[in-house]
Amino acid sequence: MKKNDPASRIQDLRQFGEFGGVNPSITDSSTYTFLAADTMEDTFHGETQGCFLYSRHWNPSNKYLADALAALEETESGWITASGMAAITCTILELCNCGDHIVTSVTTYGGTFAFLKNYLPKFNIEVSFVNIADLESVEKAIQPNTRLIYTESLTNPLLQISDIPALSDICRKHGIQLIVDNTFSPMIISPARLGADIIVYSMTKFINGKNDCVAGAICSGTDFINGLSDVNKGTAMLLGPVLDPIRSSSILKNLHTLHIRMKQHSRNAMYLARRFSELGLKVIYPGLESHPHHDLMKKLMNEEFGFGGILAIDFGDHATSNKIMQLMQDKDIGYLAVSLGYFKTLFSCSGHSTSSEVPAEMQKEMGLSPGLTRFSVGLDNDIERTFDKILFCLKELKIIS
Ligand SMILES: *Cc1c(COP(=O)(O)O)cnc(C)c1O
Image 1 (cartoon, rainbow, N blue to C red):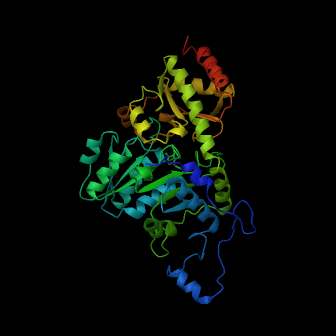
Image 2 (cartoon, helix red, strand yellow):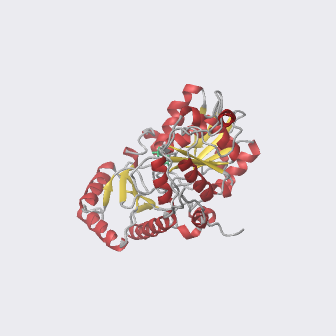
């Protein structure tokens, strides 16, 4: 197979502005004039190509960004939403009807987990939570009313790798859809190429990379995107989580540096993961040979972008995690904050923050220790200097001698 090169697909985009600007024009209009009255009626019936009607439906700036994401993922189409959660919830609600069933991982992002567990029962949609790495239990969980398997390419915070080709085979066999959240690994993993039907993103994280807004995206075939945006019954059109076009134009510009950022995040995270594990700390990072899914990751990844910018260290208990995070913040290593994919390092104690929606006994079952501390490693130019600073903190707190 030809080398997969998502970065060049973005680089090759031909999107310029109305007056020849090197950046596409921003269309900050909610509604659009029709030069011929007949065109308006046809557009409402979905019979006109290339006409914009109303910005909750389609907006030219969002269309540029959607096309760029479709190029990134090699899907026919894309759709932009006002948050990652909007991308996830609209996708699931578009596919599922009352009485349907979903199979998913116990380690999904906290908001997704809460939606699946606490919100979907309102619609009598049933969800089975399984260990997504255990393919046998995934297949066993499938029922006659199962509509989809939902997973994350890299799960949070344990960084399990989903075997997308194997999950796709299971989906094909049962005639159901595979949805993959690729928020942790844009460029690194190309889920559509590996057999996913729909890819969802929180662009809030690596894709935008600036932590200045919340946004999401859905990449899939044209039929699904057309259904989602159908004027009369599309979930995205009717629930209405549209991103402001001024935001989407700024995200599009940031997307053009994503490949460089991913390489640097990965390089820095790999360096820290190696050094921390040499110190005898319990480090979770898919780039380490000690990671249970290291070989699988190597098989699935687009190698030049590395193993990603997220690593986790188990400091044993919550109090120790808090102490080290506080000290690291005081020493300007980064910020004690949730979220990820930022140019500065961010750290948080997963069990007490981003995974706190997951009940304590389930956290224990999935191996999420109370001291597990997630690092979203920044773009530091001198990562050795950063490591030395962290080493100082670890010694100061007598975590290592
Ligand atoms: C942050 C995140 C989301 C939710 O995205 P928002 O933009 O905050 O709505 C979903 N999935 C993953 C893996 C995330 O990290």
